Image 1 (cartoon, rainbow, N blue to C red):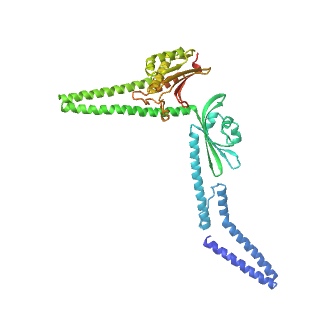
Image 2 (cartoon, rainbow, N blue to C red):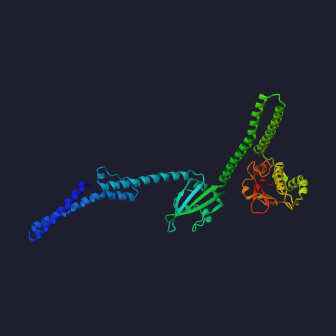
Image 3 (cartoon, rainbow, N blue to C red):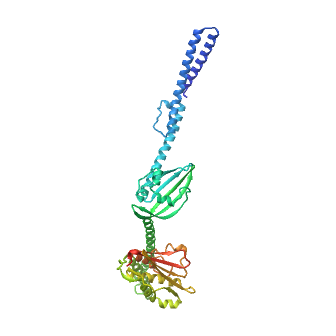
Length: 446
């Protein structure tokens, strides 16, 4: 309180004490009227004292109420802030108001980030009473599932029953799943991932939803970045020595144009330039094969016969390495494919198998063909040296190879051909042998 307010308070207390003494004296001497008069005066003084105290704490109480209800519209005047207690209360109020504004700004940025993401996000909050609330949900999540943006869990739960069947809502766990959901009567595949965290006595489950196509696009971008790194490295490695040699040869011609030793150096330099240029040409040609792959010219083809004919091309090499071929060619498998392109696929895979079998005892290549109403699947396996686990994710990247003489486009070209046919190729990771699986979808069957 200010000095003035202290003085007023002291004076009121003194008046109350004096009035009390007068009342006591009047009662003892039976001065009834005087006693009653001063008694009323005491009541009035007590009322004034209470009003003063009330006025002192009214603004403080109002500020505290505003803090409790997150109301930051209250402002204390400069006159009131001359009171030390009022000033400290105002400073505390302003501190919490600034913190609230900062948190609101951060929350707004956080909400905007979540809302702008292309992956669907749902954050659920569970309190100590096991009551679940929708903490956050973004537009991508509701767009994927074609549902309204519900913020009440009871309403949202009924719209995402396919997800709640995968997630144990009583025992939250971190999971990763590829799931198929019916969206507007059409089945779509999504990658579902959940993570769980706990803080302030509450559990939070962060659920993310991505379309399979989004994951494919990410992998494609990563592959292109790796391709660009390989290409720039290859081109720079070729151009750098050529540029250096060209400069040296130019210097030799200027200094000693007719010297025999100089002519010999010129011949050697030109030979190196020719070899490096040829290497760069081969590199560009392999790149052209990838970028200029023609559309498949499909025709009715017996897949079994095509495999047998391709195996015949490697017969001498099979005999040289004593490779045992396991292939049942007794049953025809008719497909609508580009015969020449699919033949190139088999040539690439058989070539890789032969390279892996060079130092293998009792080498074997096994070809299995399985067909149902949905697809035809060809599995080509060998018991060769295999592919290290740390390299298995890189084998379809253009120009990646573990062979000294390899171009690094065989599997990349194979993958492109299979995708052009509406199918695919993948490496089986759960077998002791190296097994590549070719898949031809049913829409290309006859």
